[in-house]
Length: 258
Image (cartoon, rainbow, N blue to C red):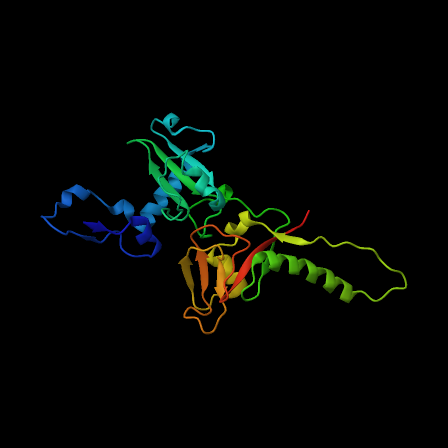
C-alpha cells in the first residue's frame, strides 16, 4: 500500500490522501475518519496545538520526562536542526517532514511533541507571528551577481557603500579620516531569506519556485540558457556563505565586520 503523506498533499493543495492497494481486499474501516487531514482542518489543529503547547528547551529536556495529556513545543532554526537529531531521537537530519514549519512527533498515545521552525519558509505559516524569530539588528540583505558567493558579495557591498559616500562629497580643503565598517557574510542567517515571499520581493521570480538542497541556495536562476531561467530556488538544507553556482545569483545576509 502506498499513500501520499498528508502534510505534503496539503502543501500542494491536493486531496487528502490517494491510496493504492497493491494486494488483498480493502478494509476501509481501518482508516477511520480522515477528514482531520484536510488542509483547512489540519492547519487549524496544528495552530490550536501551538497555542496550548508547553515550551521546552530541547537541549536540556529529556524525552522521557515529557508525559501526560500534553502538547510540548521545541523551537529551532534550520542551521541548528542537525544538533537536535540525537537528543530527540529523530532518526534523520532532514527538515523535510514538516507542515508549514511544524513537525508533529507523537511520543505516547496522549503526548505530542511539536518541532517548531522559528523562521518558517512560508510567511503564511500556521506558526503565530509572536512565536517566530526576527532578523538580528544590523543584518542587511544584499543581492549578488551571477556566480558570486556571499562572502565576496558582502565584502564588495561594504566597499561600494564607502565609495558611494566619497563620490557624493565635494573635495574639501582638509582631509577627513573616516572609517567605514567592512561587511561580512554569516552562515547561520540564510533561513531569514529562504522563503518565496522574500525571494520574490528581491528577484521577481517570474517563473515560479523550485525546491532543492544546496549550500548555494536560496538563489535566482539568471542564466538564460538554463531550463529554469528566472525561477527562484528555495533550500531544503543548510546554506553556506561560500556556496555559489555559475547559473544563479544569491541573496546574502551581510553584517558589519566587528
